[in-house]
Amino acid sequence: MAQRFFVDKLQISSTAFGPGERIPDRHTGNGEDISPPLTWSGAPEGTRSFAIVVHDPDAPLVDGWAHWVVYNLGPGVTGLSEGEHAPTEGENGAGNTGYNGPAPPPGHGTHRYYFWVYALASEPDLAPGLTRAELLAEIEEDVLEQARYVGTYDNAG
Image (cartoon, rainbow, N blue to C red; front, side):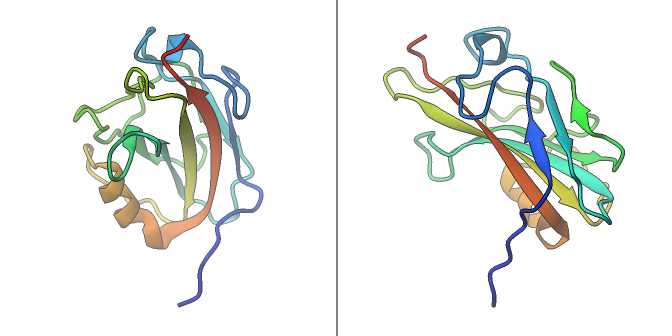
């Protein structure tokens, strides 16, 4: 089977930190632990919903750590404001729903945090509480395009 690539014009960004920059303490487990503001644009034609995943691939676990799993966002949604709770949130790595900010283990160095947005060709109306893996399995065939924005964080201050 041929590899499919899903990158084109879709973009995701945050006014809280620049691409590749350190995520402010306010948005981490060492601060207020509130989600940063996110905006996206350039959704492809046919987009019927969006999903967001914040993932730390550097966490010392087999599949990294999910910090936020959001889905069932309508096609007219172009962002989430700082600290906003999404209408449908999945289970993060801590086993809770909602945003769980960066907090790498002490002495583990700098981690990368991938903020992914997925433009979907369907409105799946999925039940709350899905894990990252469950969400990705549910939406895999409906992804029109994806984009990522990367921030970093360490406990060095």
